[in-house]
Amino acid sequence: MNSLRAFKTLLQFSFLRLFWSINTMMVLLPVVGCLLFILRRGFGKLTPPEKAFDAFGTFLVFVFSSFLIPICSLGFGTTALGAEREEQTLVFLLTRPIPRWQVLLAKILASLPLSCGIVLTSFAVYCLLVGSIGLKALLIYWPAMLGMTVAYVSLFHLFAVVFRHPTMLALVYALFIELFVGNLPGSIKRLAINYYGRSLIYGLGAAEGLKTPRGFEGIPEAQAYWTLAGIAGGCLLAAFLLFQTKEYRDSA
Amino acid sequence: MIDLVTSSSTEFDLTFTRVTKFYGAVIGLNDLTCRIGPGITGLLGSNGAGKSTLLKLASGQLRPTQGEVRIGRLKTTSTAAKRLFGYCPDVPNLYEEMTGEEFVRTMCALHGFPDDEVRDRTEAVLKEVGMTDRAQRKIAGCSHGMRQRFKLAQALVHDPQVLLLDEPLTGIDPGGRQEINDLLFRLAEKGKSILVSSHILHDIETLADQILVLGRSRLIASGSLAEIRRLLDDRPLVIEIISDDPRSLAAELMTFGQVLGCDIQESRLRVRTKNSADFYARIQDLVVNGSQTIRQMQSLDEGAEAVFDYLQQGKHSS
Image 1: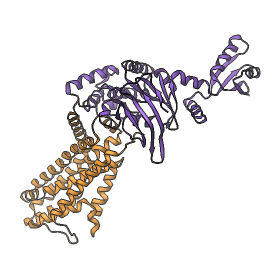
Image 2: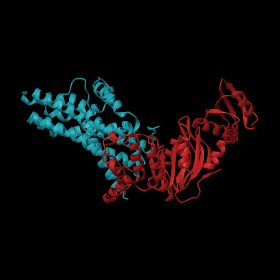
Image 3: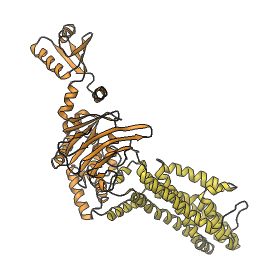
Image 4: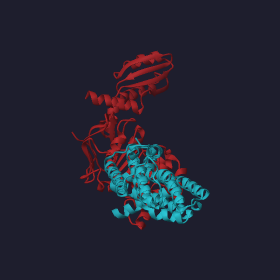
């Protein structure tokens, strides 16, 4: 018997289970919806180029990073472990000779490539459809999109460890905190991950003509990156600590 | 005090030492001490008595609030201990999108066996639980009985020393029960320790040679089947008898030392007896002698709940 082989099996099993789940379809629906919107809007045809860059940047801020990234992260982040809890199958994993931290690590490693893959691929496709302006946006913004996705996935894994029905709560969180609170004036918007992503996008895009809206006071890019990394690290650390000690009595 | 519930002991005995488990303010298991060794041990108790809590503690899913649970020298929460037991939970849910064979194979692979060994073990265990011909069916389309067998297969696939089975016979037809009982007897003969829970007295009677009875989160009786039977024979029982002449029958029954009282309602006679075994033996004599005609006779509190209530009272009074 080999522990590494068992972990590899769990990772492979978790990835395939997520990939072939209904969630993949549910996540792809808004992705395709945005694709159709971009084709119809024709960002690449707008002139001058600064105006086109600003319009596409506004789409990235208000649609892609505020809605699409949380939805893609939620679809896989909460489900990787949350589905096992909701379907009462977690017991089969917790009674195998695999340490608990490895069970959670396998679930995180299975969901991250899916969330990041769909976010970055759709971002790249949108950018390429827009043309030269989009290509510029792709090269400037991809690290910001990746950072936000990792932070969201980490937060939603923490939801899955703590709550019995994490998907519903994560959806409420995404719509209320990220979409609503994240767009409120004042410092309350700092509660949303989205705020740090927007700070990055406005900061990185300023040199290319992206205008920061009035009332939005972003933070420097380096600080935003560190904050996103801190959120991801903190959520994952909390998730590992809680999962190690939490007793799941879902079948009781 | 240690209630020793085994005929012999091995290095893989499952040992509970003064185990108490709280769920917040609610007690799930109260000061349990016992040792479970080779053979089949029945875990009997009404719903909410603490059977599932005990099995979850034994399988390392829960940590005791006080005391400790060990398999041999290992704490059941340790990763190494999980190689030693197989656990069959009472939940009906499995990975619905898989076939039975895929499910058992995956569960086997999660023990870290090489691919060819996973294949061989899966084949063998599916044959053992009688599911070879139905192994390619999607679990979503399987009956409750078939799911029970796949669950049993995943618990057996790594050849564990200790088997923990939570209500494994629920939903299985009589023929299937016999097959599973035979399988458990074979495993017990090989020296495996098997702990089977049920809230049905009959299931445990036919299967286990040692019994633990739980009631209201406590161990209220333990021992061999004969010892538990003796306890049950001494319990008071209400028996309803339909007779052509209930008054004369009541007069005759009142001469029995073990009859505490009789109530007559038309042709029905309700008898309260303090020793059911003696009472049944004597009333049989009455019928055989032809002195009384009895049309129907049934116990009104033969159910598991009444049995547990009786044992519970005995535990408190002792």
